[in-house]
Image 1 (cartoon, rainbow, N blue to C red):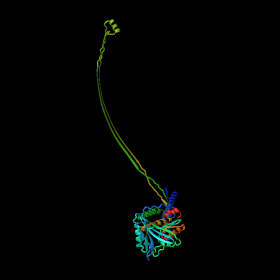
Image 2: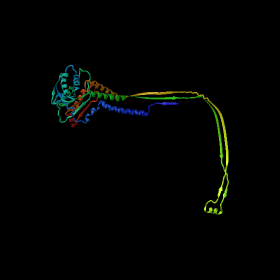
Image 3: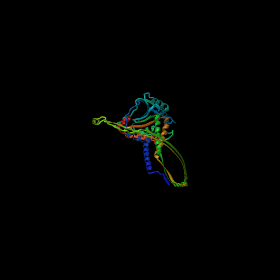
Image 4: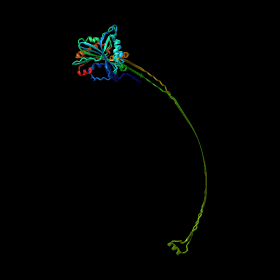
Length: 431
């Protein structure tokens, strides 16, 4: 009998929840990067000292007249001018300086390096070709900046876009900002565009795609819960048969024959004959005292024997042994197997969707599409700065300009409006 069950444990569910929380925290972090929420806190960051690393000069053109041709979409003409500048200009700038209720416009361009000022020539000739209604002259004195006892700086950072695709009506021109500042007698506005190279654009696209790959698993999570039970019964009877036969035969023959012969013959002689002789008694006494021969003695003997011995022995033996063993064992076996299986189970699939991550993925897709569409025309990184004598004027100018540039695609990024009020920071910023 056997029984099995499969289900999700409580520990596994807790581990899943912890992992989901970590992924959501990661999504929040990516959200700050994707939406560029840090742009709202630029005024809290440290301002580094200015260093001119390429030593290239800016050629400034003073715009003296603007006439817009009828049935001409002004942004398209400006777009062609910026496309012409993209391969040669490191920075393109537009400066609006208002002093004593008089407006001055300046356009400037600087090369990546050197003093040839190729970008300045492109800007000067491009205005004549793409915008024939705009008249400009070279301004060699530099851009004037109003001097105030107290200087305040504000900036606008965000993604500018068109309100709609209707080219017959364009209401987002810079003249809207100028017309809205009639109450401000003095201010200076800088609109800066830094060149974004093709390699930098490709790196940004690769980074966005990498973010998309990391966030996409968080957009939708599927949880499957299953439970099953199996029962089984087995019965077995075995029958066997075996038979064993053993047989052995042994035959032994032994034949032994021995012969021995011994012959002994001994010859000897042994006899005894004794004769004692003495000359006189005085000599005998003298010989006994002083030593010497006192008399003579003779002896003789003999002995003879003969022996012979012979032996013969024969032995024979024969043996036969025969043995046989037979063993037989009968066993009957029957196998009867009964297997009964019953499976009961249920499966549930739950899908969790994270709408916040889904929005981030849509923003990433739009950013990648925008970068790919902009690469052929040339990409620029832009920011706008406003200098005024009081903080409210600086902030008002930034807010008005923000209203001019917000369009349909501006929601992809956060807009940052920052105001600097510290005098030492403002001096660094203005420089």
